[in-house]
Length: 355
Image (cartoon, rainbow, N blue to C red; front, top):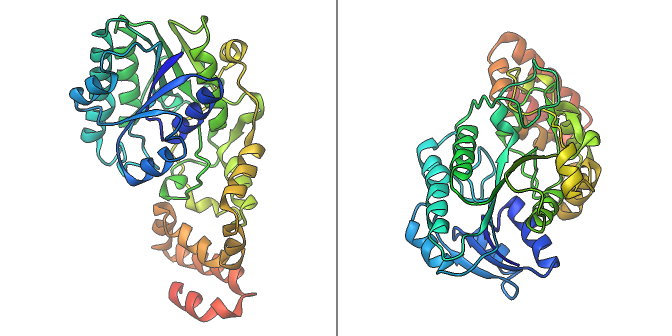
C-alpha cells in the first residue's frame, strides 16, 4: 500500500514509519525541515520519499501529494504541549499552534478531497480531550463527553470534527500517554499530581496499532482508544518513581508536584485491542529501552546525582514557591543536606547556596 505520513519524524511518527516499512509499504513522509528531523530522516533516506513542508501552506501539501494515489493518509503532525522537536509548545504559543494543528488539518483535508482518488485517513487524537476526570469512575470510554481544558486538547477535538465531516473514510485513534524513548526531564513533569491516573502506552505499540489499522477493514468510521491495557494503568507517582529510580535519579519530593488534576485517565481499550492486537509492551520494556539509549549517561547520573536532583527541583515552580516560605527554606535545607552529607565535596557549594 502507498501511505502518506505527516509528522513522520516525531515520536509516534518514527514508530509508525518503522512498522510500515517492516510490512513493505511504500511511504511518503511529510514533516517540517529542521536539524532534528533531518538527522532522523538520514536513517531512512534510502527507504522513503520525503517532502519538507509546512501544513499552514496549502501549496506545500499540494506539491507533496502532487496528484499521487495514496491508499491511506496517517496524520500525526501536531504541536504538542511539551517536548516538541519544533521548539514550539501549544500552551505557550496557542495561536501559532492552532494555525498548524487546526488550520493545517483543514488544509490537508481540503487537498485530499481534491485528489483523483481520495484516500482513507487515520488521525491521532488524545485522551486529553476528556479533561480532568479524576472525580469520575474509570475507565474512560469513547462515548464520554469531551471536556478539553488546554489549547492542545481543544485543537485535537476541533481536528476530530474536521476529519469526521470531511467526507473521507476516516478513523480516529485517541492515544494514551505515549512517552518518547528519548527521555527528557523538563518542568512539565511536575504539572501532574502524583495520585493522578495515567495510562501508558509504548510508542512502538502505537506504531504497531497504526500499521495494523492501515491494513484493517474494521477501523473505519470508528473512534478507538489506543492504550497499554490493564497492566499499563498506573498512578503518575508510581510511574514517575519507577522511571526516575531506574536511571539513578530517584524519586523527587511530593512538594515538587502540583495538586491540580491533570487531563489523563485510564482507558477502555477492549475494542481497539480486539481489532488491532497491538498491546505487546509495558512500562518495564520502555524503561529498558530508555536505559539502553542513555548508555554511559546512566553512570554520569550516579556520579552527579545531587546536582541533577537540585537542577530538576529548581525546574518545579511548585517547589520554588514553597521555598519562598520559612517552611520551604527549612524543607529545602533538609532535603539538600540529606542528599549531600555523604558527599563532602559538594557540601560547601550547595548547602551554603540554598541556606
